Image (cartoon, rainbow, N blue to C red; front, side, top):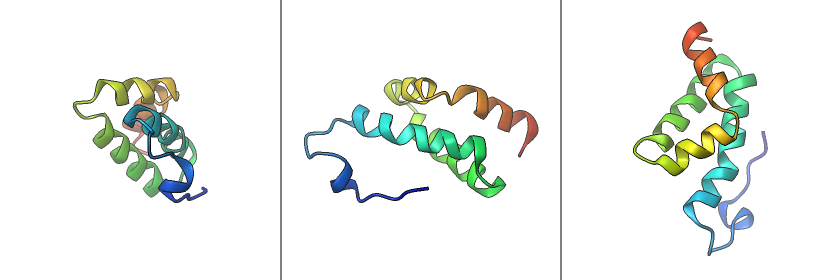
Length: 77
């Protein structure tokens, strides 16, 4: 996983939706392929970001996050 400084990736004019939509895909990828601990942490981060925010929920879905999150709930790993 690559780590970037926030100000190197996004302009000061970046919207919340723009920032989140670019962050959702790496978190979803961790839910799919990470270690058990990384999967749990990524799912928790997505949960926190989706809470009471329909734009973030849509970004998670657009990043393909629904199926791997459901699978994680079903299997626990």
